[in-house]
Length: 280
Length: 209
Image 1: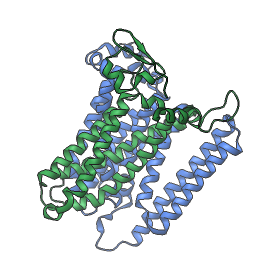
Image 2: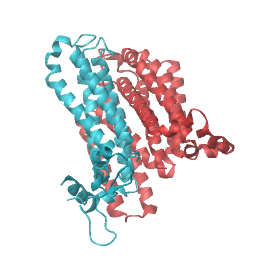
Image 3: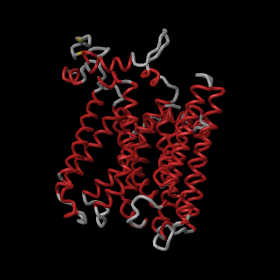
Image 4: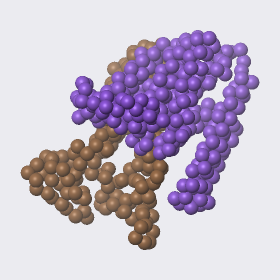
């Protein structure tokens, strides 16, 4: 899926975009605007990681989620606005490539999903210290549904699909951070085994360049690894709930944790898709 | 000597027999997806590494989390920063291994390293000098000038690392293009594949020792 398929009649307009103000100013200085885009992603990344982890029940637990949100909201807004504004500007200067890019489609869909999940699910949850409200449920469901479209295209996007590895890596790192004790070691052993099997399958068992067999093997191992990461995240969440006592009520509902994971991963997905525009 | 080592790293290390044989470095850069994944991971780790160090620096500046102890912010956020930094170094080293000679003659890469070293020195100074009396200002909404200065240096240094890192693929001042002598000297262009071309078109090519 790409915008040139969705809106085929827009090509003439798209081809003209880099000659319109302010794109013709941005284009010769593309690299510097890219830096601003990356700096905005950095700010957004830091805020979403800390807020997401707090909803999951980790990170800066000395502060309530509401207090964390109040302290970070200015920077969160700066990141979202910065990513959007610089994204529009460098997008206009590079419009023809983006129009035909499936990775850009994923990036834009993930950006929309990221805004919805951040402001209509994470924000109300954080301000209510993890308590689930109807508004956060509607916002979360809508955001996750939009993001699912992006994920589906990412996973079926041909040359850009390996970029999905970044989303899996981010999920794997979050789970590594939130697991404790023996479960963390079991988790790591599982991840290491999957990676070893992946290497053996694609370098020893299947001949180099035999993509007919390598592709299904890649997909199968990625699915197993994804299920392993998700499964351990669920187990850790259930272990936490079993160990809960009245002193830690804000460890909160399962839904808050789900949004905690989602708000980090949706922005990672948007950034990863953005990077893979260069490779698709 | 450094260039000779990097050339060996790029051209010879791991190279088998036969005309089509590749060194490990060449195999990495020509891999179907691995190099792209490394490059993407290196970039995305900025969200974890630089994104979290930003929050710590903002606390040191007294801009955010003013009611929270600095030690709490450090102990809870810096482990994430360190994890991001380790992964950035690993992926960065692998990316360097894929094109060591290119990076050696790249002005932006050299500037990136300069600011990386500056950021490292700042961390050491903060840890051994500024943090010595942290108990005295741990709860202060606005930490002392030395801590704020350290935060400013950190923000400037890491922003510069990101800035110059992003410029690396751009060929504004690539060796072989006509440019001032000082730019050629700053990248040791005369020992590069394309040599050093001055503004008057004179090309200097020195065979590396």
